[in-house]
Image (tube, rainbow, N blue to C red; front, side):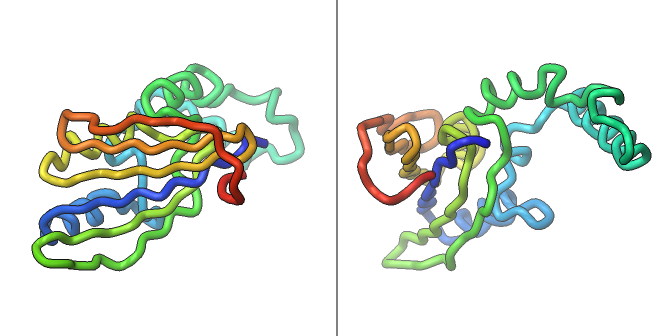
Length: 169
């Protein structure tokens, strides 16, 4: 069971572009799907599908007697390297778009295991270079929090410091 890192991502810029970001980030039931920005490799996804189908067909057998899934065949390492964390966003929810003057802003809150998904946020900023991305994250178990801001290719802030609050877990 991992420690959960709470993430608050504020995305701001021209309203149509903020709405384009939200539409792109949404996948099925996920308000934020890392695969939309940094896709999980198909070779791992296929191994995951095969292993899951085998487990569904053989519920009485140990998962260790069936085929190995993609996550345990290099997918874990890939996720940590390319997403910054081992799993996709969990409990993602977004607020409404607010507009002040000419700037629209939306807040997307989500959890990740152990660490924030900095590579995913960077990929989103590259895909939507006119938008500003401001991630504040909290991981209580390791008593650390941070802030990561970027726009396009430029990282404007990447800070981490000790944390003693009630967020993250």
